[in-house]
Length: 294
Image 1 (cartoon, one colour):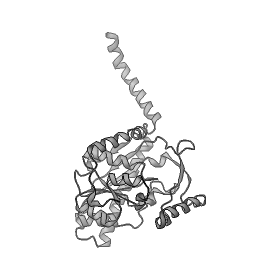
Image 2 (image 1 turned 135 degrees about the horizontal axis):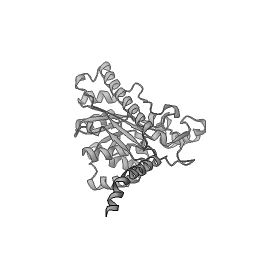
Image 3 (image 1 turned 120 degrees about the horizontal axis):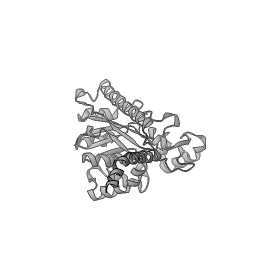
């Protein structure tokens, strides 16, 4: 893992190239974003939201859309296990992700960075089928304490859509996945002994792992001002209040996005195609007379 001080932001050329590589995924998911204006134009700030199953499927679009719309490249706190995967760890380093320790978070905020945090971490990315969109924050207070200590805002956000791309076949704790868990312990050592490392076995289109082309929905809420708790980073009551306010905001965003998803006629490619055809049909009465008059 590259030291924080050695990291330099991706060049505009690299960002454009990576964004272009994501175009097929954008076409597949037709993402919609709400509330990006709530993201400050500069840090420090903590963007706090939910992980969907597998974790990395929807996250990349967040970084590139924020850069495109707000002109800032956000950093991310991530599980240390990412850096134990050859090749992938290089991508994590290039993108500015860091091990999700309090020391790293504190340093990023101290230097005015905008930081994405998923308090549910691997637990949300490896959730059971019955826990879709349920925050797995437990009693975690770290992000709230860091925000209060830095005096920076917390921007709540939510993501919806990935859970509908897959059908879980085997939950992470299934006995049938015991060999995979054993292999994980062999490769990852102590990290592999955690109960949140094993991912569920899922299918997408048919029996394949290809995700179904569901639309992705993103929402960013109003920043939560943490200066009202200034000097209280060591006060459990104050930190808990900040954490609970952020959690409530994220849950409300998720609920709103799911309601939008449930009524969105363009949620799937067929729905989007139908809307396009309907729009073309509505244009005909205005276009045809003009053509005839010529």
